[in-house]
Amino acid sequence: MLFKFLVIMVLFAVPIIPTFWAILDIPKRRFATQRQKMAWLFLVATLPCVGAIVYILFCRRHTEPLETS
Image 1 (cartoon, rainbow, N blue to C red):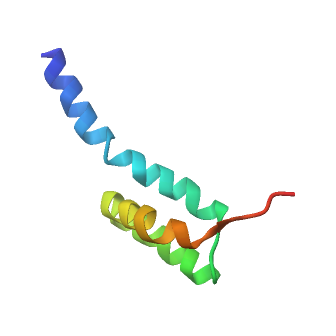
Image 2: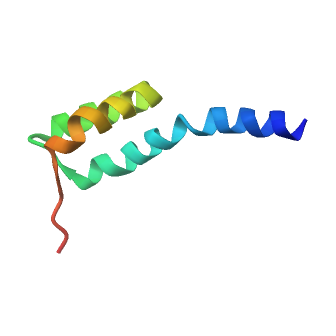
Image 3: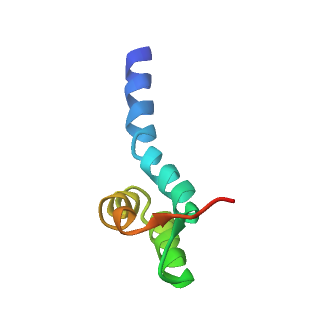
C-alpha cells in the first residue's frame, strides 16, 4: 500500500518539477522583448509539463541570464 502511494506521488511530482523550475528561471533570463518573456510564462503556466520542456529545450539556450549588480 505504501509503495503504491509513493509511486503515485512520484508520477504526479516529477512532471511538476520542470514547470516550477521554468517559472522560476524565466524572470531571471534576458529576452529580446518583455512580450516574449510573458508569452513563455503564459505557455509554461497553461501547458505545465509540455510548456516547461519546450522552454528548456528550445528557448533557454537562446537567452542570457540577467546581470546582477
